[in-house]
Amino acid sequence: RKPPLRLGVGATILKLFGQSNFTFRVPDALCGLLTVIITYLIGMQLHSRRWAALLGAFSLICCKWFVLLHGPRQATTDCMLTMFFTLAVYCGLRLINTLEEANTATPSARAESWRWAIFGGLAVGLGALTRSVAIYPVLLIFALNALLSGSLPALLKSRWKQLLTVLGIGLSI
Image (cartoon, rainbow, N blue to C red; front, side):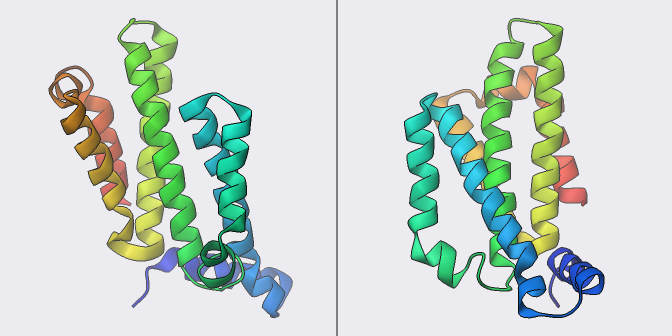
């Protein structure tokens, strides 16, 4: 009854490296580490200051609920879902920034906006394979942000293809 990604990754690791508590927790440890790194990247994207990004990543490491209860020490789907959710947020932020740059009509900015749309869609789709519909609120967060900031009509008019790509990839996986 669980979505297949976390179970498949866990089974592959166990088959490759043998059965032990350590190997069973390796995927979660890697996802936890990637979540901390992505949190740092989000901090750099939002504030462009290294100390702010490090503070965000350090705060996540110090959070007992992340580390001990639902994170890298447990063999649950929570850590992988958190990593994909955080990755989807990062891709969404990069997509928003590149869409703003793409209005200058440079080909590299347009190509980069497509790249972040595809990566964001993959993060949402893989998150759905990890924990079913628990990843989809990230799409609602960005839609609500666009609606409240007043940029939704302009985004739908000029960049609907990138937005449809994120939804299409995310929902089809």
